[in-house]
Length: 265
Image (cartoon, rainbow, N blue to C red; front, side):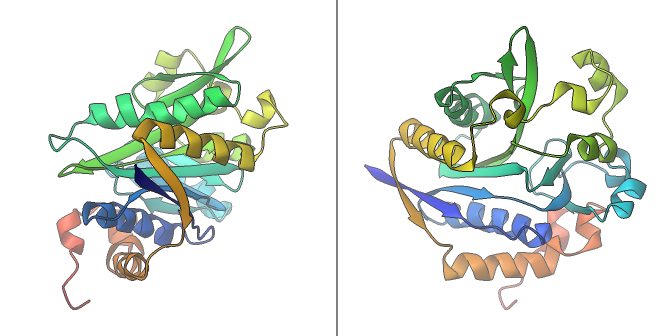
């Protein structure tokens, strides 16, 4: 049986470096590292998808007032708000060489859905990359995911709302009226909820245990706990300096090629 590396590695007050480390994990697995499952958090940040425009998807004035960082990830998807009540998870692994989004969302995301079911929730995937749970006759979004793949290497990462400030979330994110109409709701916070609102007894250790067990079973890998490698830390630092710390990336969305690392950096 192969092995699943589990990392608890976070820089809550520096989302720019944290996202650089995400890309470093992706490249590390691409180069032969074990499949990796990471748990992490941010203290106060909005993370936008690669294809988004900050001024269209984020209330910039409110973010500035609340000292909320705005950072861009290298995967697609929509804008999300992170505070310490939101647990972030990442799975990076090798998969089919003929890559597709189906492996990301039909297969890998199912591991997270099954983890919530292990915790006793009625959880399903909707809209490709949303995870919702049912309470009574109502369904609430508790997680959203985004991913990327290249040459048979896949990275999927997502959120889990445990005890997030939903008022801040609703004010700092801008959601298109078309999307809200499709959901038949009038505000972001009315279609999301925290797991604490559904079962206050479930905490981070419970979630971590369920997610590790679920992905170990899905991928057929034996989990072990590890620390980032020196190579990953160094690569994350270089990506942070060249790309993730820069306004050209976070606010203007210059292409990846603009930030290519030199072999001597």
